[in-house]
Image (cartoon, rainbow, N blue to C red; front, side, top):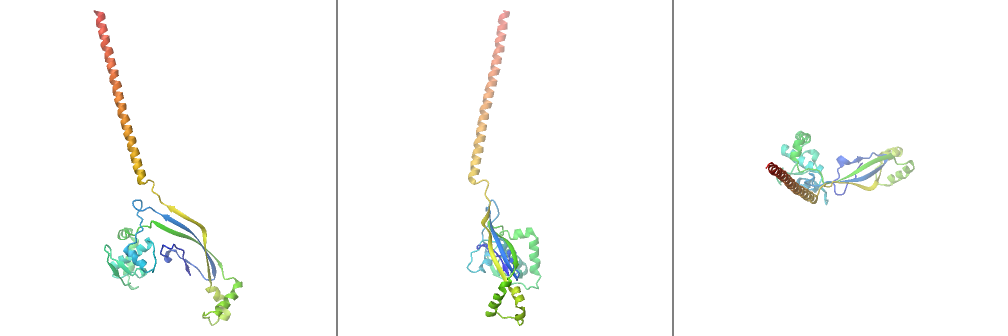
Length: 273
């Protein structure tokens, strides 16, 4: 059995996020929620825009309103890349039944390549291992501006308890379940190999929220520019006044010294006469 905890606005990603539950055990799945909020352009390259290619993936889920997903955006983009080189879609991307031709709005329903065809594997390996090609061809597949993550913690113990085996046996025998030929002797082992119990519980009712905020808003920028401009204008004005005052004092000092020299010469000449 496979179990997964996901947000209602996000496509359940079983391949990447699911946990497997083995039979014969009671499993407890505890989880806590973490939400990350990023600023859009010009602060980051994140997006919430669902491209036509991604919408094709979402169309397979009836009556849903899923948000943008970078993972499935890459699925749609890589499937189109494979189709453009191989003429058919990659079997591993079976959830993408149609593609939007790169650089256009043209939608084409595609068939999947035969599993013996090596072309899809060749090109999917190439684009995934060549970051420059992936980033250029799938430039629209940037990170989500809003991302919700459920951190799961799984524990288990042997089940069912011995005291419950008889009740389970009676329930199975009274139902329409087809029993094995050796049920009368192997019923305990068969119950244990087919019994799975799952308990889902919060690890905490709190949600961790990581929010990105701008250090300076447009108002702060204008305020700082105005303040700095006013400061430097004030400093410049004061500097001009100080220079003018210094020039005035210097000229006054020179004039005073010159008058003193002239007066001394006049007095010397009068004394000689």
